Image 1 (cartoon, rainbow, N blue to C red):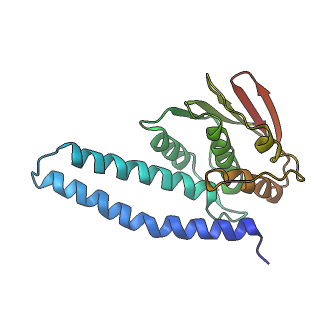
Image 2 (image 1 turned 180 degrees about the vertical axis):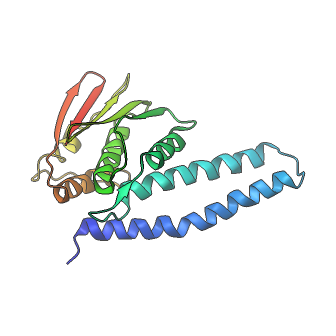
Image 3 (image 1 turned 135 degrees about the horizontal axis):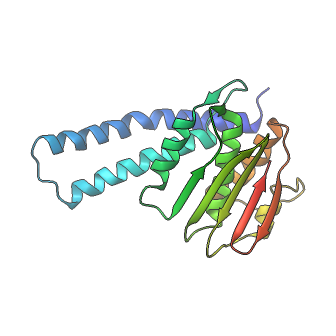
Length: 198
């Protein structure tokens, strides 16, 4: 029997898979226009940037929300390329310190945590992901944090019931993903900083 997290992951994988081809076709079309000698005005530049941003978010979402089997691994190079693309032109910078190829499910949890941190860092900041021995440490720092205490409490308190919008779905999925990994989450809050360990 599949869990709600499994079904959500399969739906996400399907959406990401189905969107890759049309986005790739748009990118190829823009490239062909450039090669044909068409004038490169702000319109074409805007389309190109939009396609690049959409592809970057799609790659990020595929890792954060997509299906991952217990024995699946993801390469460090793919992780770094995904985070680099996601940060291009944005207000957030990512630093991935975990070495080597890693279990995809654990990386998925880290990416969901990154999204939780992003929700508190609307004005930007710096997110660091590290693997210390067998413990993942994900830290976000910003000059201006907007912390919804009830929302963050829902990550460690199973009885907490917080209404969630689609933009905050990561807060609903993360506890289930951590439960699959048989890991517990601890959180620490400081001025301009949130640290999470699992």
